[in-house]
Image 1: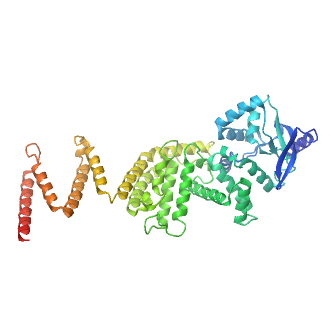
Image 2: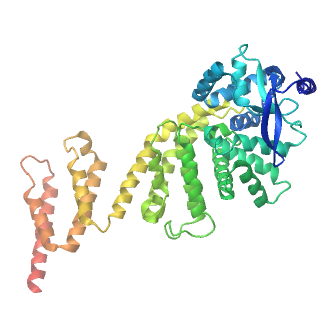
Image 3: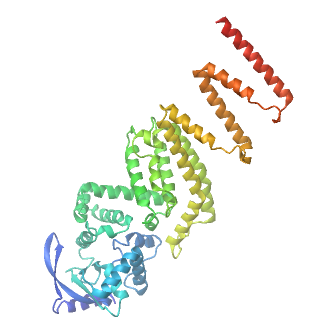
Length: 477
């Protein structure tokens, strides 16, 4: 049914007795408008409904025009609405099936649903039991007064009680969409003020929404998923929290002035590395792939509490991270190139990101864990007994009989550790150092150990010579 026919049919319905009355905020005045029962086939979904905005934007980015007036477009939107909250839709569908439509919708005079798209979708699924949609009819078509209609839609859909039911990204994307419309004729501050009024929020909260949206846009560009907002909207993965932390960190460290919460002398390149590393962690956050709380150790809080607060820890953490991720990204890009024309690009890119997670997760999670330990050591630098006790526990847990203990790189690390500890002991206590040397010499088992006789005799001679020289110096002092 085309627009002209819908408009005519709805106009005819409005000549009949109204079902009831409903107060509607229209042009900043509360007006009592009539409610009518409109046949379902006269109505058209709003493809930019706030619940599915990220998905319809994704389809548009692919060049796929979703026309809700066609059978195909209607089917696509119904699928998106259903999948946006399956469990909640199941409950509401059952409730409507028993009680009928309780909440009144709002439509334009040409049948575009402004408030009530989800209810309309459920009523369509319940046909032929229900054939009508109860709604107020606005005195305009959508294109007659787009800003006022947008205002009404936002007020009803994104009010404090309503937006709890929306997927995480939708409120950020909705704020950006409205801002882009208003900024053409308003100063930025005025545009933000209007959005705040429509959404029932403070202006600072709307600015926060826009800032988070900027981070999300950068994330999608980083992955070459520009405009494919479905890939930032994974409500069960906890990605939203990571975006919120990153937005805060970029404000703290990248606002043009050096923050005391970061290591001294950091540069914009370091902030860029921080951002890209965080994007990799966001990408790998699929399901319960890792505990999102550990993400905070990267850069949250005071300097002593995170990696970005110490130059040495940060450099080692970042270098290790990129050594893990860079070859994985190269492999993924080669084996799973992006198919922008995919019939289901969300599934295609989700599979691609899952491959990325599988390639890097163990490595980046271990890197995170290792540097959390380093951070703990740094914080305990003035508590030597605590650190020595922890080190002793770690050494005691080594299985010396394991075949890996004999590997050259392991023995090299052990020797390096001994030299480091010996150096610490020499500086503080020569007596204890000599006692340790004596103990080590006495502990050598010549009967069971394999050794090079020539090297051993040369070393014994050198030990004897060093001991003689030390004895002379002590007696002479």
